[in-house]
Amino acid sequence: MKIAIYPGSFDPVTSGHLNIIRRAANIFDKLIVCVMVNAGKHTMFTLEERAELIRTVTADIPNVEVDCSGELLAEYARGRGSCVIVKGLRAGSDFENEFQMAMINHKINPDLDTMFLTAEHQYMYMSSSTVKELAAYDVDLSDFLPAQIIPEVKKRVSTIYQGGNRK
Ligand code: ADP
Image (spheres, protein in one colour):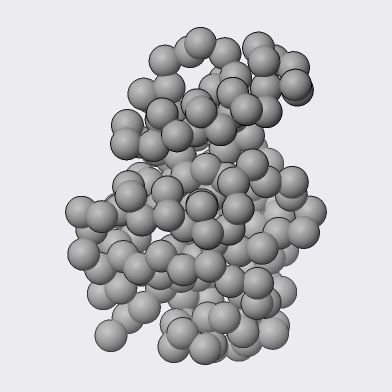
């Protein structure tokens, strides 16, 4: 059974992430979407909340499992019996950083390879941070976020921001 891991912060999961999840789930027998601890990022949702949002939007994809981890990704993959990491590649800045991460993960765990799926053109410039910025305003988010989670994201953003400013 070919198991792949799709790691990220997913704060929150966007339509761009969901597009990668659906495409990767079509390629592998099982896809584990893993919300990873990233000490460098100040997140709006907790690890478990982010995982729950992903569970909500992937409920119709039977071979997707959602998990959280604070482990090193290469070790987590080994523990889950996976030899493939899936990453989404957007225009511009992703490449250098992702290339470096792929090399490091392969060095730590030589059985582990990284596969890149290029972002669909409509999601090419979309990130969780830009979506959060937009959510602070009265903007239609249906092109950016899966419909089921829009109210929850708007609600959380409204507890933190008023217009573009922190409360
Ligand atoms: P971000 O906070 O920048 O959205 P994440 O850490 O949550 O980033 O992203 C996890 C993975 O999903 C990374 O491989 C990232 O390149 C990819 N990704 C993020 N947004 C998109 C998108 N709009 N289209 C395709 N892949 C994406």
